[in-house]
Image (cartoon, rainbow over all chains, first blue to last red; front, side, top):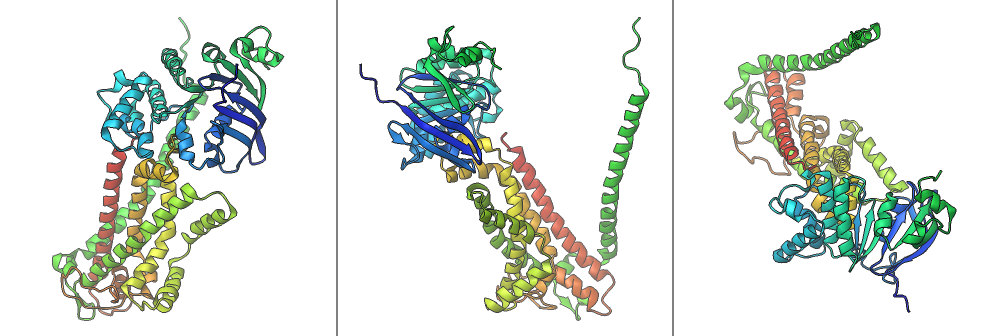
Amino acid sequence: MVSPAPKIAVENLRLSYGHKEVLHGISFTVAPREILGVIGPAQSGKTSLLRCINRTVEFTPGAVMTGTVRVDGEDVMRVPDVYGLRRKIGMVAPLPVGLPLTIYDNVAFAPRCAGVTDPAELDARVERCLRQAALWEEVKDRLDTLGTKLSGGQQQRLTIARALSHDPEILCLDEFSIAIDPVTTMRIEDVLKELRAHVTILLVTNLTQQARRLADRTMFLWNGNIVEIGPTEEIFSDHPKDRRTFEYVNGIFG
Amino acid sequence: MNPPTFTATPHVLRKLRRERLAALVLSGMVLAMVLPLFAIVAYLVVKGAPLINWAFLVTNPTDGMRAGGIWSALVGTVYLVVIALLVAAPIGVLCAVYLNEYARESWLTRLINLAVVNLAGVPSIVHALFGLGAFVLFAGLGRSILAASLTLAIMTLPVIIASTKEALNAVPLSFREACWNVGASRWQTIWRVVLPNSISGILTGVILQVSRTAGETAPIMFTGAVFFKKVADGALFPYALTDQCMALSMHLYTVTTQVNNAPEALPYAIAVVLLGAVLLVNATAIIVRSYLRSRKKW
């Protein structure tokens, strides 16, 4: 069987902020419509990795990135349309960010920035994304209230709706559940299971069990290095390739 | 029965005593600031009241400043302030947007930021000399409203830049990141999210400069303000931009130092008008700010 061309290919990626290197030359690929779980303790470079993929790392003064990150075969540092690249990638940050706009405008923001002006299309998109993020029923009667007035869990779903609003082919979730309750988390995980049919997902999480529930493969990132990457069952089995993986997954890392 | 848990031990009593002392000292400081302010305003109003009426506002000075009103000075000040801010506000705000949102951290931007901070502290007489050299002589504007306004604009620019940067900085970085993540450009981010949420702070900073511009004497003394100039009483647009003009601050200065036998109440009356105009503008600023704040969205 010929394996399909990777959706994301990271090769020897190094990233430093000033003199401090946070990613020490990591390489991995993500297949189309795969869910790759990324686990690892704080400060291991998980968020920085995501910021390299959609190139928002360039907004950080002093950040220097070497090596290549390819999305659909194209080097992200060389794409002519960086906004198009970012639209291809939906990004959900750890803490919910409701933009200080109405709920409707929060979701319509990305399409508008991409030049969509047709009200009917915007309406349809807002409804579809809010439904996908399991928020539609709660807010459909108050789309013109401020997104920042929603509860934390609702705002996180709003953030996810916004991340879906530009039809991304890749979804990067950065510890999306740390600010929301377990019930909402499970609802969003159900959403992710539906999305996996047509979206590639990078799931950064510090809940190892979340990776276990959702990910096809799991990567253990530690101190800017990949300790181990492999099928999720293997990572969470009693005998992963690296002893540190076993210790981290079972909470005896130290 | 259990011994009472919440007894006032000596430690607790000491805490309470210090709490009362702190409240006393701090509120005393507030009084020390507020009382003189009210005293000054009351003194000015009482001393100036006999002269202040509608005719005083809308007629020209006569008899070598000893009689008549202050219309030509009042309208001159309005000219100077409005033109100065029309020039300084857009340049200052856009400059701050660039410095805060676009400029990368480098020795050049650090130098520019340092220059802005230091320029804000330069005495106004230095700006006056610069205005004399640059606008009156070099640019050939002569002593005119235009030259004086530009000098005032140069004086207020660094302060507007600094206050605008402050307002922009108050918008959380996470909003910008959220916008960048969905493919918004820097400009789209600024226009749709950053500016709407910092506009109240930006406007406050600009409007507060009105009082400073109206009150300064030195920058306009060399560049466009005159001792006396007669305009039509009550005329709304009596000056051309190339004219010299009178200004309230300058008028106050000349009446107190250059005119013999001026009515005793005159300088106080002028001061009251100047103060009233400034308070009016500041009150507007407060209203605008509280209106925009009530719409604040996070």
